[in-house]
Length: 281
Image (cartoon, rainbow, N blue to C red; front, side, top):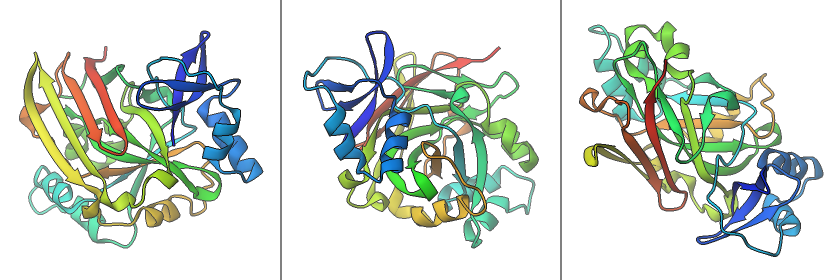
């Protein structure tokens, strides 16, 4: 099932989406719907279907979820880990060390404050000359780290800050519009194997494509369940939180985001997420 949010009677409301319309779920945001399903031990699709209006409406999806917390795993793909190490001082292999280690790299990215939805602006840090998109699969979490669904995410990152010093990673990843989400959450029953998802990332400038990359979650160096297990060790992440799973697409410095660039992330099972970049003040 595709679940998300829309503006209905002026209120942010959860909804079930199909290809041409949506059925609002009155009196619930998606976070509230997830919380109820987890509390009552009910299937999220069954609960949503039982509460949804029988009268479809035509509406564009907005941000599918205002997450309680957003966490980001890194160095999960070997190719991008190797490329990021080439930007460091000679001989430094921080990213490949994390890729090979038993413990994954996981950082706190922020809360819903930094998140935007489809067709909203992603941010370019004012103190960065190489802010880039990172096309990723986001895991949507329930109680005790239970995976309730997946969605597309853009883990926008100031690559130059992160390369300058790993201690700058929090600044490189946390700023206004640094996490785009959408267009909706796809429940786990719709994804037969989350480790076989194809994802693409395209950047356009002035109507001209300046970058295109492709990856598959088959190349993830870690299982998603393992990432979640490490995240929740001694860390009871609240339901309605997200874990971004890392990117297998490394954007070239020549395609660093500029004001007005359009970024499109796609995956056949998860839809399309499009945003425009805007330099922050």
